[in-house]
Length: 546
Image (cartoon, rainbow, N blue to C red; front, side, top):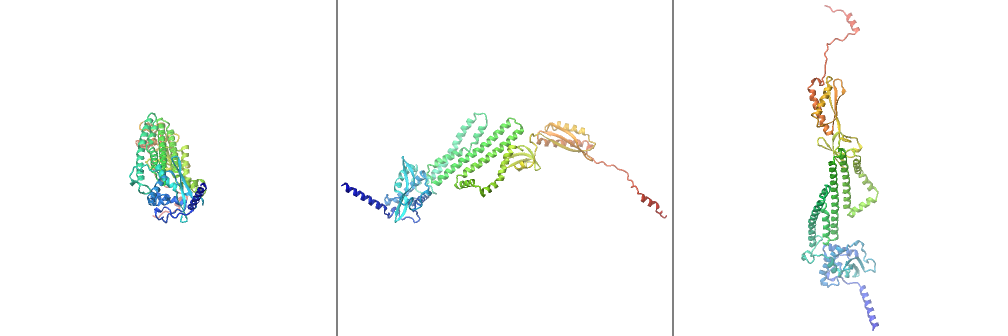
């Protein structure tokens, strides 16, 4: 009896092997005629075709890539489309399929292998394999999602599918608009609005709490720093809430990648934004402290220049790093960057030569902040123009001329060419007033008038250091008188020179005989003396007849 049973079992196994090796006459008969452009010739073609179809919302076409023969033929169209849709959400959320690593030959990994694995998804402590199965239909190899995988789609969807399936009406799930179902569009709109409102509330709450803590201190820097966070603090919250909200929407891989990049970019922008504000707040605070501590004027201007240039350096570094982090998200830019860094060819040389002038200007700006031949607030004479240094950047210097014009000068010029700095070392300065007077002018009286002018009318301009009046030069008709005066700075000196010149001219007007004059002397005209030869000729000439 046992021998008979063994023979029957062996016969059934042999029959199963033979039937398994025979080609299938048809697959998924209930779906109808297979589209001619449907490619299931290799694992890669099947996986790529299925993903393209489901992300377009063409679930009926995607059903052809599934094994559905275990379902009644009449139910295959509806059930196949539903299974394709459910499998899309499961794969988008839990398994990122890289089709480039799948075999692209009809035999698969090997002629004897009937299955190709795309990955595995955990389910209640177990691992569910997602596999493709090779079938022989009409003596042709095709690849479809295997029967065991298709049977596990419903349990996987219950675990990882949308949470709103039973809450929203069916109209939100029965079609696709621009690659997303209506419930996903609704969820995306709600996520964006909620993320913006919540980020605003979180920022307001945290800033209020931080400002209250900052007021416990005696310094104002932390209060200004808290105010600087208004705006930059909102973006990270928005990015975090956006990433959290979109994780429940089961977005397609491309849209999910776009959402992640937007969140990442917003975070980078927020950090860079806050760093720029931090630099400006810190610079303003240090400058205010230096001004309040009654530091020497020259030291204050020197420190102001150093802070301005250092802030510019850090700002440029912040912009460069932020731009690099933003661009390195993209594969094309990353490959180009790596290639440029790894190579030293003609392209790198050309870029280096093109950037040489810019780098030279940047280094000149840094050198200017260290050596400080000129500082913000200095009075300088450059290219025949006198003015006050108003702004120093890494590439140029802004000079405010006396008539309120602005002269922009390349920063290299202050290192390569000579210029006059009237405020270097000390803002105190001396100036001259030149007058032309007659030889009859009383120099002592002019000195006394200069003393009177400085002691009375110019007492707010003259600093009391220098006052002299001397005969500077002697001309053929006039004397050149020079008055030398001093002032606390060049601005006061200019007004002082104008005032002294005007008052001395008024004083000379009251003494007309001291003003330059041209003298002339009249003498009687005499005939020129005659020569000896001419006198003899005159004496030997005959007298005229009467």
